[in-house]
Amino acid sequence: MSRSGSCLCGAVTFKIASDVTDTGACHCDMCRKWSGGVYLGIEVAPDNMSIEGAGNITHFASSEWAERGFCRTCGSSLFYRITSPGPHSGTYHVAMGALDDTSGIDLKGEVFIDSKPDGYSFAEKTEQFTGAELMAMFAPPA
Image (cartoon, rainbow, N blue to C red; front, side, top):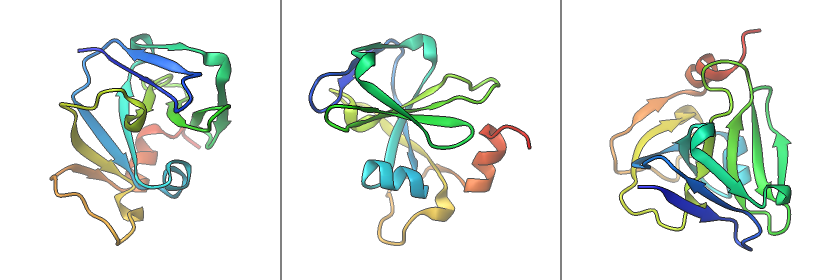
């Protein structure tokens, strides 16, 4: 089932052509500051994502390997995207909160588990990675 979504003001809309069944949580400091809490992202291959109103997106290079996209009008967090070369290059991690319908999406994984604040936990059993484990998978070699 395809999914659609938008920013808060509607200046940016998007469609995900692939079936979306799971989400992952990121507990890193950047995602918590950017999203106002834990970031729930949907992994989407670049060829399965179409965006209307892309001129309304501001991109922020938050690391050497990823950028964050948000609406320049209302500030809604929309996605982070892998920019480093490699098999994951161009992959979007779309904000679950920007989806119009989140039914049937299960929490499957958590990253930067070593940065998770003590004040919350999820009931679901998830695959978990530390920050160092995640960086080893995505960051370009030094």
